[in-house]
Image (cartoon, rainbow, N blue to C red; front, side, top):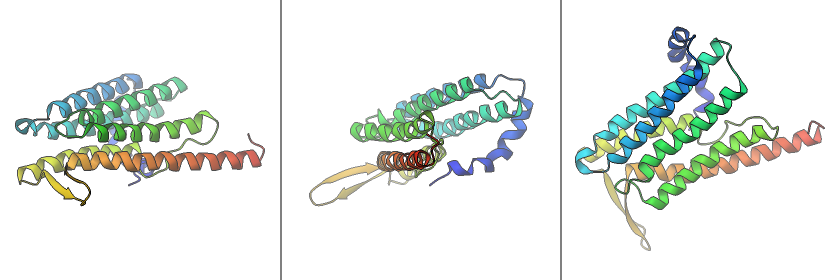
Length: 224
């Protein structure tokens, strides 16, 4: 999935509200998105019991709403001519905290996720974002390319909690895998975390290679 390149297609859902909130400081919208991400992480964490699995649905809704506010602040800033380096910096910082809150809510919940898998997922997600912003920091083009962008994470973090609830309700919340030399149970949320761990780190490597090649071209053309 590479959804970050499709952001322009959701403008129809952002522009009407952004125009109504054009006099609101975009940073306030950023704070709202961050707080919602924190609440989402808490909801995911406390959903870790058989009688509280329905909270995953609440968490899924909070992921979408938090992501919406995360996109809305930038749209308001553009429409109101309030784009600034400070606002961009704040947005990146809040995005990383939001990632940790939402994904960490599952990663640190032993009921849903193996803690080692959870840590690898967080490493993959954070390194993916770091490689994108670090490219810009050293003078190369800002990177959104790769197999797992933030938009992809938002979509997956919405879909898989819903899938987990549905499959749990029909008796397929987890399944047993026997590889001969290793056997284990895995649930749908762990499949999502495995994707974040593997594809996230692959995306980080992919972005590192792209940035290295961009710097090589810039050096060859005398722009560095």
